[in-house]
Amino acid sequence: GFDPPVQCKVPRMAMPRMLATAPASRVGGAACSEWRARGFCVAVLFGACRRRPCLALGGRRLQLHLGAGAGVGATWGRRRRGAARARGVCTVRMAQDAEQSAATVARATAPELEVINLVVLASAVFMAIWVLAVPGSWWVGSSPEHDAWARGVYEEYASFFAPSSIVFKYNVLGQLVGWTHALPGVVRQAAGGALHRVLGRAMLAAATVVMLGYAIIDTNNLYADAVDFAGHGGGLADAADALNASQLGQLLPPFNLGGVRVVALWFVLTGVQAWLSAGQAPKDASAHREWALRHVASGVWVAAQRPLFAAVRLAQGLFLTGGVAVAPETMADAFYYSAYFVTALYIGVAEWAIRQDARPK
Image 1 (cartoon, rainbow, N blue to C red):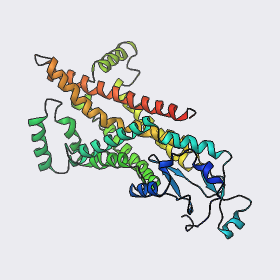
Image 2 (image 1 turned 120 degrees about the horizontal axis):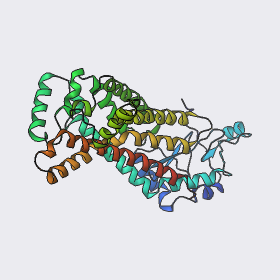
Image 3 (image 1 turned 135 degrees about the vertical axis):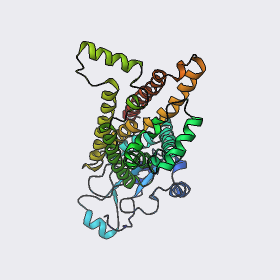
Image 4 (image 1 turned 120 degrees about the vertical axis):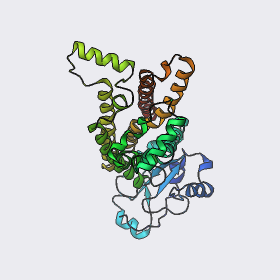
């Protein structure tokens, strides 16, 4: 919906100020070619700028708005809009934007954020493999033949970790959970990169469908403690539920059920806030980035819980004897303690990154 590209010249004296915070090696034709190869749209600032271009620095996209009220980069002069458009000359808004641009560039190249980006990428790849290939949770319920074959493979090679129901319990609903929860989860975690707006909207749309799938799981009580671990939710949850029953008359919901619903509510809230902050005027890129980071953290922890659970189960098998390692209570401890840990870790790291992001650079 934008206007056609407009060729314009940037005032020469403004260029050093606008690019003073960018490393020299990141500015120029070679860097632009590199960014284009990575899928970013770029503005060659020493040549021509275009209508609503964006500049990629350190893996981040800095929008260069050419409309009035732009927060970063080049903008048409409010009073000279018509004359500037006629002459093909841009003015550069630098008063408040220089400091904001410097801070944004510094944040984009911060080492800790690069590590977080790599973790999110690895989590997305892992979930794609988990859902589409091994064990292929999207395929569960697609046909009785598939489920019988896959269950046999699981029970032969992986039954030590958990009962096969931990993967196949959703087939009581056919492939409904696969379509509404597993597959949209892959789409959501894969969204990102150069086509930020399009894929951002795809991520939030997929998150909406994920929550529909979660509602189906919740309505049918297809939770691990109820189906996979003979009613055990881990030592902490069992103790909390016993206390709730004896002292509070079960006033509170079961510990694990209440916890997962709080996380689900946070997932929805952060997604809504990320969407609202992206569309507000004037734009606040920092607020949008913060809510988007919180939203990603509130969902991507699931990817880390799987391998951690497997590692804990292997440790239990190594150190526990006499059949204790394969007891439902032991499996529940590994499953839920892993979930508690990675949920707290991902949400905590997201908040830490936001605090780092907000520090003066």
